Amino acid sequence: MITTQSRTSRIVRFAALGLWLVITLFPLYWIVVTAVKPRNDIYAFPVEYWPQAFSFENFENLFRVSNFGTYLLNSIIVSVVAATFVTFISLLSGYVLARFHFRSKTTVLMAFLVTQMIPGFIALGPLYQLMVDLNLVNDRTGLVLVYIAMCIPFSTILLRGFFENVPDALEEAAMIDGCSRLGALFRVLVPVMTPGIVAAFIFNFVSCWNELFLSVTLLTSDANKTVPTALNGFITSYNIDWGSMTAAAVLTIIPTMVMFAFASKYIVQGLTSGAVKG
Image 1: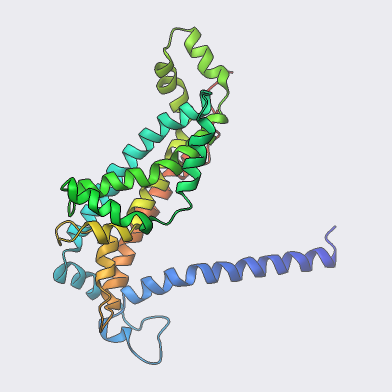
Image 2: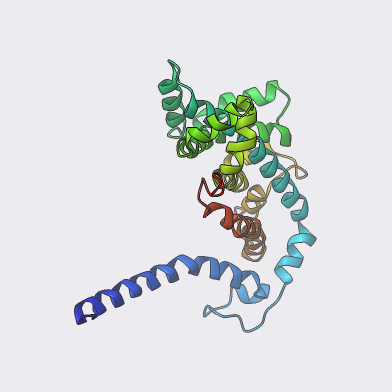
């Protein structure tokens, strides 16, 4: 039987969660509402929390005035390529750190952890000079290489944790049946590791998709800029183009939302589901 005290506690919890949900979703709501307002209504006073009229003028202006389609394509190419390479490399390095024991293993793990604590702009000078020497400034290839180096440490640690949760017996059984170590990795462990691989790919993709500091520094031509750089370009010394910025923000959010919606079924799966026959 539910007592008055437990009912009050439940009401308080739901009220707190509801308030937290409103606070969390309101910025996203305001971005979408601003994007579909007519440009003249964006600066209207008093503020309209629900537009009197809807317009796609901001989206049309976004593609008509700027090369946002090019920026969007650049971001997709850079993020997908970098995330794919990082996930593959981290899969191998995470496997080594989880399954093998060697003298410098602890040192490598500590080095990976320490790199996550160092702000990226500290190495900007040497990194920029390195890109100049390699003739990779204002080149998407250079940005992809930098993103790969930036994301490997955390992704390796993440996948190492997933590998350690997979029983060694699966790999040993495959090797007894004639698989090589690489064969056991890709034929047995990788299918079992699907949720972890998907999680690592999503993390890498979102990190590259949202990164601004390095893309602004390394990409200067309009043809090579990515979406975060384009969003930053709507802020000038004298004005902020809120209409175009919010429209671009809405289009920027869509790929990550689609990716999370598609991958959610993999993330919730058990790591060893279906690995052992009943």
